[in-house]
Length: 346
Image (tube, rainbow, N blue to C red; front, side, top):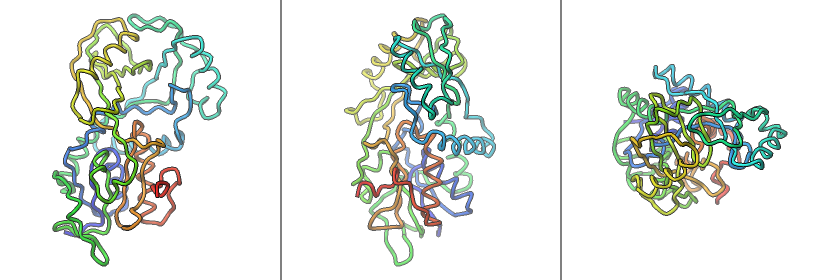
């Protein structure tokens, strides 16, 4: 078999890069072994504001300008709905929180997204003594749904193999690469934290952060917006809400833990007072980088091996933009943004 590209890993990064290849009529095959689950268990929220510090998300406006049309087109292609728009209500914990909100309104990069009027409406079962601030132009991509449906799509097109990729099996020929019985021009690694076992890119400073979420059934909560407080509470419909997320730097497994559940339950007590039942708990490893920027580029010794990784907690916003940049870099020789280029670590 001869293909233009091999993609290793099909989370959001691999999916976005596959779409670039399809648009350019490039041939490819994907290898996916379900070893990394961050895209499948992610909350999937896109939000242009870092509400913990009232600062703008890096390149938020530019990323949303690419990401939202990308997901809209993907919905039409796959004939499914996975992009849901909603307000985010940031619960203020103090007068200082309110003051920080008003200060953020004066920042040009934040003002388009923040409502200048504090929401003081009392809502049954929600603890918000100092009111809320509304964040516009936010929403959620159902990452589990879109990745699973996209995998099925590639399976029907015979463009995916569900097996472990063995890095040591790559053979370097004069004008191409060989992997088992496949000849290819380039291999792009989108492995998430699986990169730690990639002998061509494991020198990069990728860190693993375990994140856990719970899904609760709370018939008395009755909200159609996302609450952001010590945890986020995301409505899923049918009185179900996703609650998250933890950040655990010690536990390196993808298994849900009692510790994670207890942390979320304790934090939830400070946000809602209605009764609820936990119906599901999920966990995954987020691939993060110390400077909070993605890892994009080519191996310094092998320019036909590339990486698209380290999307962190905002993968739904970042993936379409960095996938397009990597494609244009490989195919058109366009320079990568210095912020994301792995050359910054050489």
